Length: 332
Image (cartoon, rainbow, N blue to C red; front, top):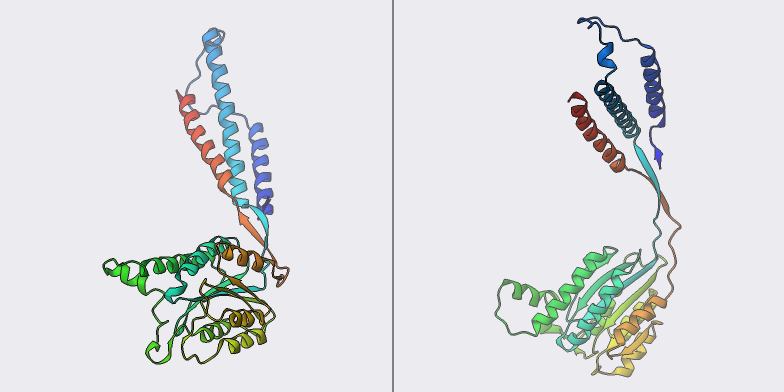
């Protein structure tokens, strides 16, 4: 702890000391009223002596609390503060969750988002984003280190998947949740079809910011690889785009993944890894991603001076309360 304005404190303390010593030298002179004669008898009584003793004791306590209040006030004027060295280090790893939101992938996606919630909560300095696709791609969250927002978005995805499985009435909430992962992702479904795997992956790659910068980039890619239309970019081409831009793809297929060998080959060509769906898949992929390289962008530290008036203010408040109480005691 330190004082932000120590010079002011020193000057005020010197002034206080001078006042105390000069005040002691002053003699009290009676300028008003009349003196009472023959008071020696009263002063020698036990009752009088006890009263004077009690009075002097209370005055000393009163002066002590007054001195404490003055000193604490001086400290508050000098602004008591603490110095904190904040670590601003950031890891140069970007992670995108890219999800095929066709109905056949619902169970996998529900399990994945639930696992990722705890993982995102433990991140520090890394950026995370979420992209979903069917016919077209929609970025639900660009890369961000606002992990609370990411967790809220993952919750909304899970609720939307759960609502899409229900046959309840369509009130406003149902309509919003059912369409949360469908709005925008079915754009052009009549002409182009659905589950356009390559388009979804390629779009996600270009959702990374500043691809020319050296960073660790990862895509967690979920799909059943069941192409039901004509994509602009094939899966193989999307995998090449990923590799060219230094993006590793960790792909998860469902129990009924179509053309599994081709899908696995495309994923592994990005220097990523393919996972076949199982109850432990999502935990395995998270553990493997944690093992990937990540390094600090810079050794960045920031020094902050934070005022800490709470304790001095509390002491001052208590001193003033005692002063008020003791003053009443002295008077009475």
